[in-house]
Length: 199
Image 1 (cartoon, helix red, strand yellow):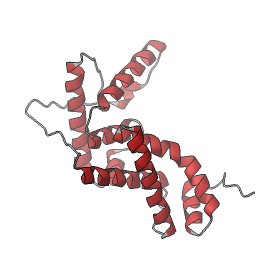
Image 2 (tube, rainbow, N blue to C red):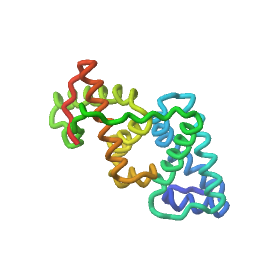
Image 3 (spheres, helix red, strand yellow):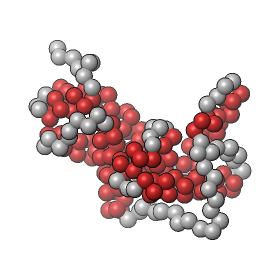
């Protein structure tokens, strides 16, 4: 039995493009949970996430079979970009994408990931509670804002990488993050949740 343990995702993608069906099975096993978690987080609905996941993998298979993947060293980014495009296509079709507009009340309070590192159990507990609160607030954000927060804080991507995956400018990515944080601050205040996070 052929094993692919020592092959990178990029190598497996090229093997599948060349006709090795078993290589795709390994790719799917390695990437399906992470990709599904990303989709579920963005769409916020299990049934819709399942549909988007299926559509995404159909597109991935077609693109690989058509030889539209080249080894850029970023297979996971390539997958995420396809999933992002499938999600956005669905939102466009349903005309349900809502973007929160800035207003005069907006401030620039932002998150900073280095404040989330815990040096002791108390800090670890507090940080866990903060992240739980953040997750609950994120569920109420529009999809484009929720997506950029997820990519930044849960996938640890740079704004440049987020811009590449989502097909927008870095300024748009930064803007979406800014509005997401503004909205989260507003919701935190309404629900009397204390967030002490900076970017």
